[in-house]
Image (tube, rainbow, N blue to C red; front, top):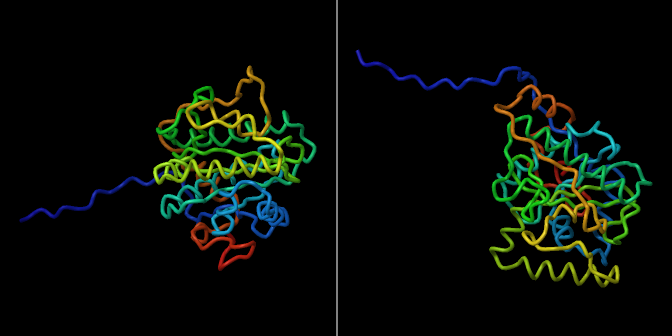
Length: 284
């Protein structure tokens, strides 16, 4: 009698709840989200990449509570996982993920910088805890000139904004962290579009603010960590961030907890997104 081969049974993660998983709402209808979109639409705002992301409906906005606290870290990490998954499935250019926090509004530049890196550290710690390694295309040491923040296997450049920023283009009424994919910059370089885009942004920034941001440098010339907060850091500045090693094997119970921390159905995340502040079938 011929033996019938049975498909190999793949072990299922233990501890994963059976209820449908959800992703956190991205706050598209929140007044702060609309005011942030208006900030980007403002004609003199220099970042034409952000304007393109907004116009094309590819700017995802989540709203957090307090940038100095960690109460939203789990759900924001889950939303970043979804953002990366959507980008891998549909790698259109000019996609960004922004987190607008309700406060505080009185942080000094140094205090905002500290909060930015505290949130980056918390997100990276969760990333390591579930087994993600850093993006191999970049360095994970913030002192390395090829550094970028890695989450879910993708490198990100963070743009921080807050009310007391010295740079006009970074001065918004509330703290904001914008996550831009490193992969998009590399694709623009490959297509021969990056330098022209960069020069356009620099010229517009100089026209609006009267000068170019002194912290700016091309990737590989100087660690981009000095650029994240928007503060002109001194030469002896030391980045507080340190990425740990990925733990062997994913903590699926923790992943499930993070994914269940909001009320945003994962199937809706891949929809059309936001165009001009209006929704098309879903919140972007």
